[in-house]
Image (tube, rainbow, N blue to C red):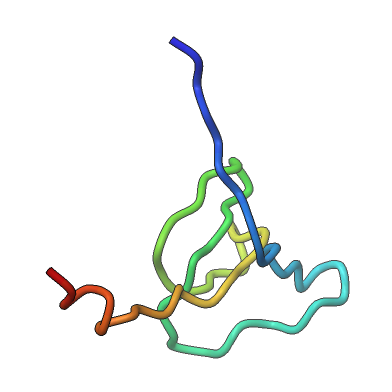
Length: 64
C-alpha cells in the first residue's frame, strides 16, 4: 500500500525562528519536537511550531 500525505495552504509558525508566539490559553494545532501534530495548548518545552485550528463551514456541513 502506498502511503499518501496531503498538505496544502498554511505552514506552521515557528516562534524560535522569529515567527509570532501563539495566543495564551488557546487550543491550537501544535507540531511537537517529535514531528507529530496534536491539538492542544502551547508548552515551550516540547512544542516546535503552531497553527490556528481550521474554521468550520457549517453551511456546507448542513447540506444534504
